[in-house]
Image 1 (cartoon, helix red, strand yellow):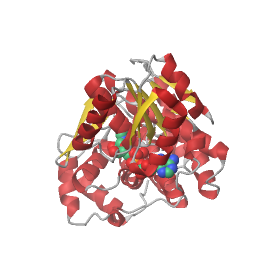
Image 2 (tube, helix red, strand yellow):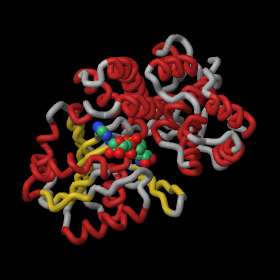
Image 3 (tube, protein in one colour):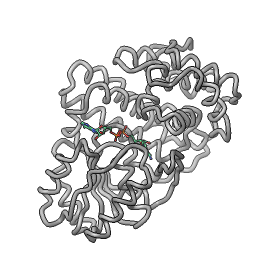
Image 4 (tube, protein in one colour):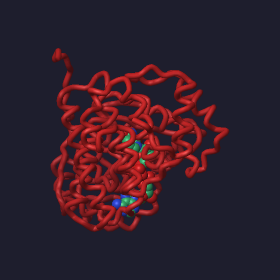
Length: 353
Ligand code: NAD
């Protein structure tokens, strides 16, 4: 094997451990911020208000309007609050939607971000921002988007509903699977991807059986950090392209779409790069796509796109969009084979390999 790679490290501070939510104030001091605007979704507003209260005068307000896919009009409303309050940083408490809003503010202002993730989506460790305007999703990548501090407190994930834990975990695993065959992968990204997959392989079944198992929650969040990190480090391929198409054009829910598509896209690419996906086959009972599908099914994940409200008639258009300006992929892509793959995923069939 020829060793040939580029490896760049992230400048972020990663803080991990149960109870670390209590260190937000210390981290504000460390990065020289005195006027934090705390962000959340409407659903997590009470948690955001509690956090703001514990920060005392270091918090200048709460904006609890974050929603999925970072619509520009929500960002503009939040920007008004940033200006009115004179905030000098944002503290994002929640999943990828809240992190997305914090990133959108940082992209416009260069304000520092502290992110406290409560799902496994992984956005907190990427310099990528997806935004939507008039139903169109665009993605930008910039150094200002990468959060300065990420505080992973597994205690905050104890109440993440089981169904969401499973789809969010499979969403994270999809980052790791695609990292294994990324053209710009490096030895460290591959190590992190395999370790991230292992962490979910062990913790997700435990979480399903016992959602309040603190050790399993910590292991899953550790996996989320690893999988998110590789998402931010190396390029994604067919799987992410299809999920962005389905979410962006047909508004299918983010994590569920990833969960359903992963076994199918992994099986499709395993034909071209079996050696790169061998660690996945080994971890999931000998077969990449079939093994991931069995794992998802045992965890109670959704298995069929038709259950997300996508109609069979939409599949032609989805295949057309997903094969336009495709991301780099280890296996050549053509419309008929992607259409067939989508049909299998729509019906919820178990991949053969
Ligand atoms: P989400 O942030 O939309 O959360 C879903 C719901 O669950 C929200 O109502 C939220 O408040 C609630 N929730 C979150 N954590 C909870 C907890 N611990 N307990 C109870 N409820 C909780 O969902 P998500 O899947 O984390 O994020 C999806 C968004 O993130 C999408 O817009 C996606 O595009 C984006 N994303 C971006 C990147 C990136 O690198 N830019 C990476 C992954 C995801």
